[in-house]
Length: 222
Image (cartoon, rainbow, N blue to C red; front, side, top):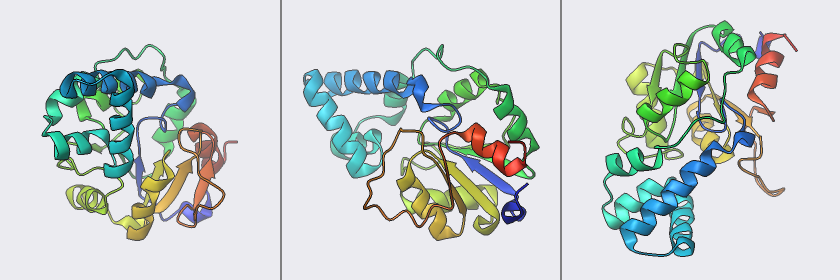
């Protein structure tokens, strides 16, 4: 273990495009389902549905948050519909499974998705029994990352001391509130979110293109 991380006793991971490669394009299937849901809900064509979808994502943190606030969408109905996808393109990576098992302390998944969906994905990844708990969008009461409220709720619910916790996430903006609480932050910069040259990324402690490579590095197994 890297000396700088020996104080960490709680490891928190985002799910989508973090615990599996963004290149699998799993979220593209969810994207399509979101567009279909919005089109049906609002009675708009595909192009307008996508505009609404992405607009709400950037304005509210998730498309769901925008739909709930603006159109009173039912979160359970929305999540059940958009997460009803095949998971054929993701498979277990034995090296990631083994590395996460070696991390000392408790481990959690912190996701803007639902626990039901996350459990399905973790099962496919061979990580069904790797974590001590999960904080999903229902537990957040639909206040998603990067709202600081959801990070504080995660820590309160699971008794996490942010100063001895680490959070790994593929979306850089979701790491800023974690750093503000005192967490060590890891950006899995795998192409799912691009940062511009002008972005202040001083809240990021570690940066890697792949979760497996980063885990090998910190565990001294590269």
